[in-house]
Length: 265
Image 1 (spheres, rainbow, N blue to C red):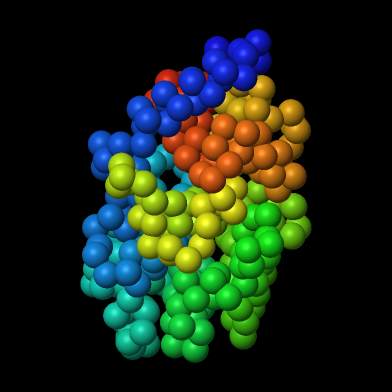
Image 2 (spheres, rainbow, N blue to C red; image 1 turned 180 degrees about the vertical axis):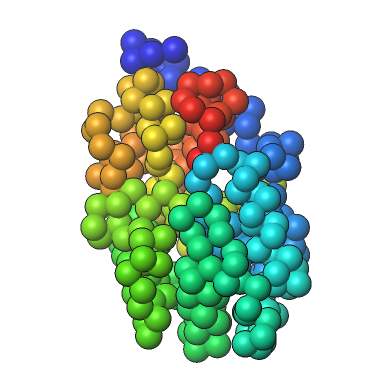
């Protein structure tokens, strides 16, 4: 499969791969399995956000570390975020996943507490900062990120929450938004935030999905940055303008399961 595919053939190929990998059988081996362990909306949001935050590297390692993180919260993330004591925060000092360490973890927990206690939660913040005129989620991500770090500044920790206004691809937060906003009968993505439009999502982009996209002729830009994210998503909108990021399943599946790119996130 290469750039010589006709647009019709490419559409049919992407549709087939999307349907192949957008299945509940996909959940168990993917980090999205962590928030799927919860039923309460706020638990799902927090578990998804923290899991997406550490979603780089091998999927087995991501799931293992995210499971540990949820256990430290007594597997009740929303209650823990709102009501934890100083003593209950001590174990987080030793949490490490790659470059995300205990200080980063505590900073994220404190920021989430501020958001749920003083701003109504993650969902309302995104809803209030995205308008129907916005082409994508850039403004929403930037606004949420600003509030996330208000009164809790840490340069090293801020690096774990990429800023699209600085031309970052912001892969992990875009993946989180896909989980929260996309909805279909297949049951992988949650579709919890029904007031936000899937057409405004952008495709999560990293080195693996970028390689697949370039091989298929969906992406010409060489850097994996926000401009590339927009270019790729605009191409995918030709095939489904209302739900372009459903093809993330195709790009991911081709990269991970069919070895078009290196395995991992």
